[in-house]
Length: 255
Ligand code: NDP
Ligand code: 8X3
Image (cartoon, rainbow, N blue to C red; front, side, top):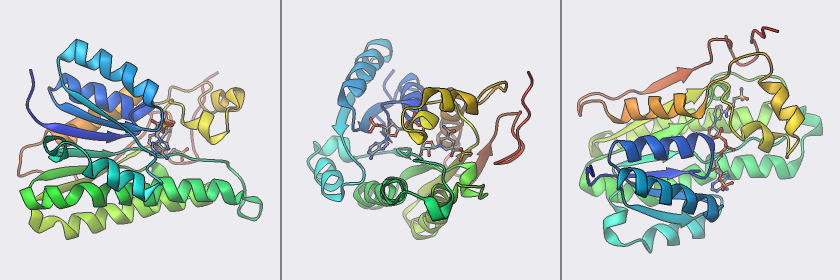
């Protein structure tokens, strides 16, 4: 049953974002879904509308493009701008190289997506939340926001920035009654590693070999948990790891 609330989820065409869309639809939220691959969003939205009877609005959005973000949001019908929950999920890692061999294009893509993209979307959405004195921003960070691991250099820096921005948002938006949460996953089996290794499926599969990683639904459930707390409760920060992963670099693999 519809709650008449709206969740805006970036990066909803795959992985954690897609799982979040499913969870919020199950809870009766109407969905504003954004990603670059519109065909995937269309398939997902048809399924969710059919299964849960929620309304969806799709945005073909490259979060790296400020003009794209601001015009897409400001051209939305007024009712779709009244976002209750923003899940800043769109993000990626590219490459895993030591700093002296890093690819500048990879660095730009990570910085532009994970930091600047998250900022642009937040800047577009928050004025209306602030005017309504209500809303919840949930940023998807990473264990890479808390630790730095070999060759993770720039990806870790972008996620450390997400951690800092989450804290800054929480301070600046406090008197606007906007909650701000960060969720920091360890290894989640999605398309993440395939994207990091630029389509090398074998290298991506090796990341999860002989251990049980998290799945996207594990994170989506945590996102929903934070979004569904009573009005007086905010979850500031959650780190969620597979039981087989102790920290960013230490995992146990059972043959
Ligand atoms: P996926 O690769 O499965 O999904 C990434 C999503 O981000 C896709 O929907 C993709 O959509 C979207 N996206 C990427 N770049 C852009 C862009 N420029 N503009 C708009 N959308 C974009 O990865 P995950 O689901 O695993 O990743 C989601 C988030 O979780 C990321 O922020 C990632 O850093 C974080 N994370 C992931 C972990 C993991 O182990 N998987 C662990 C910790 C954090 P499209 O390509 O259609 O634009
Ligand atoms: C993704 C998790 O450990 O590969 O954010 O950086 S990790």
